[in-house]
Image (tube, rainbow, N blue to C red; front, side, top):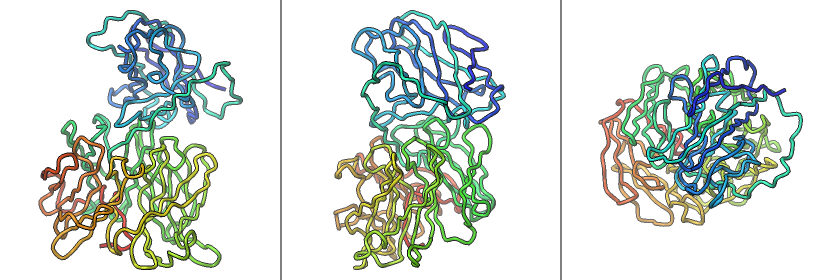
Length: 498
């Protein structure tokens, strides 16, 4: 049965909920608001924890016409098809017959937030939770909120009740985030710039962040259980922001925190004796990073790579064959195969599994394994040959989506004197970086494209060629001589280690 939380306090712009009486796992949630206000575009909606820093944006209405009002009962639910901003008419009253999604604006579209996931993973339940409605500084509208309540399910709903109204066909465009945009609580997630996230394994591992927009430093923050602890970045809570977790192969667990204490997810398997590689990504399109490992298994008596994925959408566990030798045995016979973080290169809201493998002729090739979010079946899409064995495929958006709606192919090649960067199909390299530098997947300027960048541990500086204007910039110092960028560890991949 669902639990309903009524406000413990209420004011014109805030309502506070006591969440401490909900001990079980939150499976679904609906926020219900009764409001009458003459100018909907003047309101921004959010949920805020007691610390004031764990904020869930619900709706930013600045894009709505000034002639639209809100009058009636409105609902926000993770199962809705659209957002208030997209469903609003040009004039008149914002429809309230169907629910809307929580969202925040991002680069190129809408970043969907998840109400139930926020309540389950991001907040301290022993402290009150506040619904906060803020008005624009020049607001001239008038009205009031007469009621607000949270309806929470801790089990699967018994049935779905139709509203009798057809929901609008306004699916939100998926936002395009910068590479590895890790942000701590209290930091502001930039829609256009990556922070520089560094890991240090010289002692007990820790990580730090230099945020460029606005300029802030966070860390060092301890994580992991030893010098070989793999990082596992992802969006594990409800707030459309990335965290850094870690993988413990001895227990088969992903360990992370999104603001409300440590959490653990279990992936069955004998990981201590099985060759495997973390491949974080959102492979079911629900906005949450799934727990996924590429591992060496058996395929008809031959060792071949599979992906074992624990899908966050419904808890399904699947083993998916992702070995190029099984999909294309004519062109792929080599075991030189690298695995990277998932990428949403076709920008449909679902990440593809990233594989960088050697062709029979010796060149390298990107293969994207596409998981159908409805059936969870997989298909392999092979790209052009690009790169040599030993090159690092640098993940990220290198074309701003202009290359056949894909991200483009960039490889970095280390020589005796420099790093050479090759962007498909240009065979003339850009020379950038010295031996000992780390090539990094990062976007530090204000466009949608990755920048050519290396982190130099010897002076703790980031050396960048900005994609927006070609200018060479040096950022830092930040980190230590033993720092390794997250954008190298997870943002690049190659079959052979350098």
